[in-house]
Every structure is written in structure tokens, then in C-alpha cells.
Image (cartoon, rainbow, N blue to C red; front, side):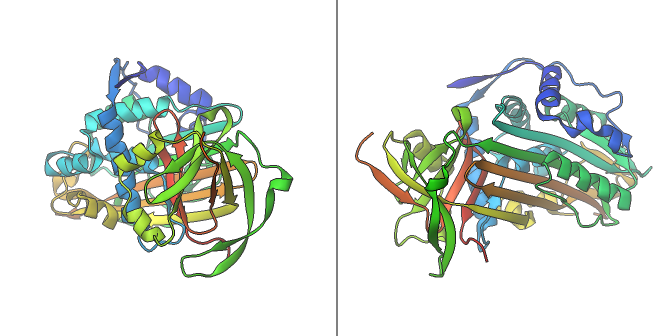
Length: 420
């Protein structure tokens, strides 16, 4: 099956400006930096098509990234979409083996990924009771030794609507970047950077905010005291939200349900591992295709469901996770090839990725869900209906915030503990 991409980068930028209030459109006057997009205008994009194979590749990337970051973490949560946007912008400056490794990890050529993300971001639904806010920006050090390629800027203008700034990389820049992230995540991610190293020459940043009201808001009578049992057997007093759902999930080693947000454009999917299966083993056993099949085969069955109220934050540095997935050259000072992005000191000092910083937040309560994510790629230089079912999420479980059109996760996480 093919899905048609909406034509027109200009229309895409207008859509984001009016629906999502991107920083690049509404807050540039608050950034005290030279805007390198001056004179760079988005090209009119031609119609394109997305295939199920491309969607499968993104699902596979999402699951593998979660698996490689969740090991040993308490309440892990990532946004694959946020990470992909930041990495795809970066990949537009890569070539040679560095690009080949990144494309293998993505599961797609970067040209196809650009088209996919352009379509995906431009068509995420937004309404009075649900919204997804996406923004991209690129920050360069104000240094005469750094030459930025115009083609790199043009590609990111065409597909990502990224604001691109040239600035001093001082304390004011640190505040600017963190303010930009906070504003574009509705304050859920107050900062992404704690410092700017002297060797840093650029940051490629994505911010994402999700805010949606349940289709059926929990009544006061449906919220009662309950107990959540951690993997170690420790019992925690929690508030459980009880309700009747109608889409039952069964992966073969986990059961769960879908709970829709308003207008059924997005959904909360929960998977509770079967008794005797640890949350770590459940996460390790996930596959992109398996997850898609589980969601596709959701059964219309009455489900007595219970979700604990919870709130959590996660922070990951994804160097090891992405290297383990196969893109090691991008992090290697000698092997990295980002010459399509630009050159530093006439090419005598190589540009490579030093850190991929990812922070997330989620709050699930009676009214709905708020979730935020930010990703920063830091680049530096260096020389060289059936029977009724019951699913009570009273022990560790996996969850996703889904775009119902594609069944792809905006967020994927696990609850392993609640409270202190």
C-alpha cells in the first residue's frame, strides 16, 4: 500500500506556523543570533509516496532504539520521532561510509527519510483537544574557520523547516537553546544542555510536545487507591484509573489494550507481560513487525482496564545505543565524514558527533496525557467483541503513544516503578 505525500514545502511551513507555533516562525525575535536561513527559501516539493516497507523500517528503528536505551533504566521513555528528526537533519551533511552506516540504522536512504518525515510531521492531526507540536533548529558557532554548505541548509529548509542560527556559543547561546527547547515543549523539557564545550561547533535540535485529552475522561468514582508491584516485589500505593475499553491486544507473551484520545487520532497502547516474564525480557523480545502485527490485530473486545496515574522523566546520552545499532563512524573523530554539512579550519579539523542528548517527560492522569521530548545532536571538531477481558496495569508494563494513522509511536516507554 502507498500513502501520498502532500505537496509543497511552503504549505508545510505554513501549516506548522499556524498549527504548532514553531519557534522558527513565532519566536525568532527572541533569539539573539544571526539567522543563517536568510536568503534560503524552501523549494516547492513534488508529490511523493510512502510505502508500508518504509513504515516498517521506522517501526523497527523505534523498537531497536528503545531496546538499546532502556536496558537497566528506571521508567525508560524515548521519542523515536524526535531522535529521527535530529539524526536525519545531521545525516543530510554526511557522506561515504558515515552516511551508509546511518542509513542502515534508519532502514532507509536519507532521501527517502526526508520525504517520510516531511509527510509525517506535516500530517500529524491537531485539534481543540489534542495537539502535537514539532520544531527543528540548527545552531552553529560564529567562527570564521567554520564553512557551512548551502546545500545542507537548503535540504533542511525544504524538509524540516529548521531555523538555523549562527551564534557565539557562550552562556547566552546556552540560554537561547534551552529557552527554545522549553518553549517548544510547553515547558515539559526545561533544558537540553548543561554546558557548551569549547570544542562544540554545532547543535541540531528537535523539540516535540504532545498534549491530548482522553476520549472518555475518567470519572472521580473511577479513580481509586491501588497497589503497584515493582519487579523486585516492592509494593507501592498508587491511584488507579478504572474504565471500560474496547480494543484488546495480545502479542503472545503480553496482553493489553488501546485507550483512545479525543477523535481517535491518537491512542495510548499498553502491554502487560504475562506472569513469569520480566519487563526486561518483554522489552528485549519486541520487534517492529511484531508490534505492528499486535496493533493491527487488535480485537474488539470489552476490557476491564486499569491504568495507574504516573509521571516520569528520562534522560539519555545515546552515543552507545546508536553505535551498537551500527552507526559508529559518526562518533569517530577520524572516520566521521560530514563534509556535505561543512568544513572546519579548511578541513584540517574533522567534524563528528560527540553526543546525542535525549530528554523526555510524560504525565498520565484522569483527563489525558502530556508528553514532551527534545533531542540535541552535538557536533565537535578534533584533528582527525468476545468474552470480557481484564488488564490491570499493576506491575511493570510497556506503553506507547500512537499516531493512529500509521500505528507508529511518537513515544515508547515502560513503567517499572511509581513514586518514591
